[in-house]
Image: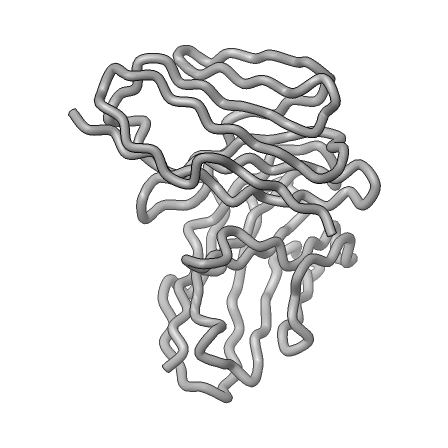
Length: 111
Length: 113
């Protein structure tokens, strides 16, 4: 079945450093969504990418969708302690329409 | 606050028992999704309902079932509980069936002893 893998599983950075998480799917995706889950909280929607090669920015966050629509990345510039949490990508399989969540990347930011 | 409510917040029960988790979607949302989150399995999609009808099924065990009622609230029934069913169960809702962001509830933490 479809798998959505994220790397790294865990990243520890100093405040001010950049951070990137990568999401890779075994199948072509019709769209990809990104969610953030704070420790003890629930996933919160960040953004959705639909078009091949699409790039979207939200302040210090940059999201990319690969040309083949099989991978995506989230880049945070100059991390802050408020960025702490687990970042999940969620890809919608083009054939089954199921939304499959990635394994998540836990970001820790040291002040 | 996402607007999605889930009850109860916590549930402790014994193996072999049956429990029901309840979810009320955001006002206006017709789709409801159920997810299971455990430490070693991440966020696993269980099932989706849209306007009362089952729309998609994920890795939902046969011991689990769900339904969405005419008022759009949903219930997830877990029976013959096992220790491995201990997890956080999230409900999410969205406006439509496809390509819509999902709003997650605060979750129900189930502990099976």
